[in-house]
Amino acid sequence: MMTPKSDSHLVLIPSYNPGPKVFETVHSARQYWNPVWVVVDGSSDGTDIELQALADRDDGLQVIILPDNQGKGAAVLAGAKAAQEAGYTHILTMDSDGQHPAQFIPQFMAVSQANPDAMVLGHPIFDASAPSIRVNGRRISNMWARIETFGAGIADSLFGFRIYPIKPLVQVMTGSRWMRRFDFDPEVLVRLSWSGVRAINQPAPVRYFNREEGGVSHFNYVRDNFLLTFMHIRLVLGFLMRLPLRVWRLVRRGRLRSSHR
Image (cartoon, rainbow, N blue to C red):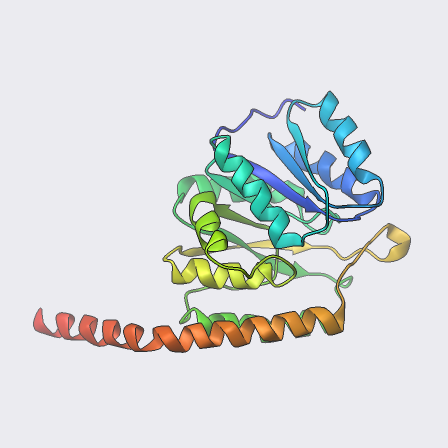
């Protein structure tokens, strides 16, 4: 693993009871980037012990262990704060279950390094392994995210393979009690967009593994769809509060353009 170490960008992998797939994920990420950090979110499957053993043998791997399960958003925030304290400016997040394409890490990082003010968002390319209910269901969330961000250009709000500038990410998350569990992925994009962080979309394949292949899913259709519904209600209210100012700015911009003709 001779990948040169980056002083600004790192790969952050939140992990909760992922089973053996996490070791494949970490190995693949380390092939393409240095450093890689794993935040173990209160896992009870024993993967934290082996991950720490791997980190003891690999200077490019760091493991942060949270004592209790707090949710994906909380794990990302813990990792982002630690990365900021260590002097890093950007994190690329990817899931621990092997669904995200590690070979695309250098490409995404290059886009981020050329556009440090932006968030670089994976736009998933699905294959036959993708459950149709998940593919169709995300269209609803994506539609609402586009409305809530005034069409700011977010192609997919749920795909977790993405790069965040750490400073605005931490500011947005610490300023809210939300974005700590499954609802983290779409809500943080909307709120970052509201704060002025622009989005750059990059296509990336996604792979869903079945149980025989070692796939693990903690998605609960009732609980997590309720979280998403409640989240979008909050965001729509925020959108409506910002709408008058948005309209005023558009009208003012139109008047300025007319006065210069």
